[in-house]
Length: 114
Image (cartoon, helix red, strand yellow):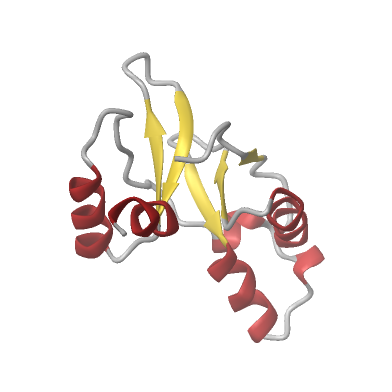
């Protein structure tokens, strides 16, 4: 998993998210909503493909609500199965104290299984 977990405010724009992803060389951010949500590079690309100005679009308009989460001690095969079953590429990792500690991506899974 990637640590530390990168987050972005629900008040941020898609442009803010794109810059954070570019600067951090990551492809997803947890949005600090309750419960937390996620915005991904795919969401950013969709805004660009629609010809919209990313600085005018709030992340809350494109994020995915109610994301799946996993514990730090989950087996990689279980993560792969969840990603396949839910059609997702990112899973926030939450410890036993309900603290977000990282993010596991499909790239992480591929690296571990190869």
